[in-house]
Length: 264
Image (tube, rainbow, N blue to C red):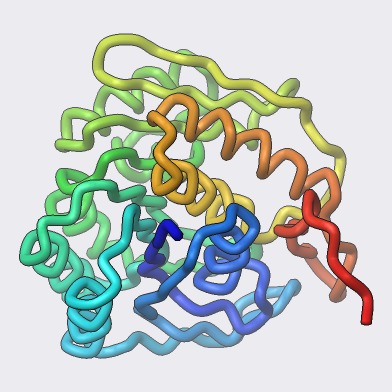
């Protein structure tokens, strides 16, 4: 069995973060493991509070995994402060980790900041250079390059600049544009535009987490990067199409939309 690790925050509502990542891994037949960076108190309506795990404990979790259950791919999500970012970078270097998918989570669907502004530079300096692929949405890409990203041409410009930070490849997600849901993938040589139908639903909590962990799952399964992104795109499109209208706010995607669940 293939193994994948998520390094991210916990979402008590179960729609994003560690919970979404582990569900995604399971949906792909991957054995999932976790390193928790922060605990959030949140639901479909918003984030009530955030409490960070100590950097030393983050490293110990990484040590426990890498010395016993070495993953085939690693997804990194919410890393809210500079000290945690530096400790994760140390762990990735100490254990020579290669297949890293970095989702630069900055703001939740409800508008809460999940990455402290002063930590953005640390993310660019410490984690992006260690990543196989970075997966920002339009807002996150804009924060990283210091310029608003509003069009496909802007997405391509952002991808080039993020690659200059040291990433191997970049996917800029265009979910907030109009028309088809279009993502731009750049490998340093050419651009790939990956599209899917746009689903009319408010229930999109955890889409970024789910997409990035699906990329990691497909890398772990042995697919090349372009194929992994295409498969992840198809998976998240289905998860949104079959999203769950639960709670009183922005509901989650359905991570098991393509799996028959036995009713007891």
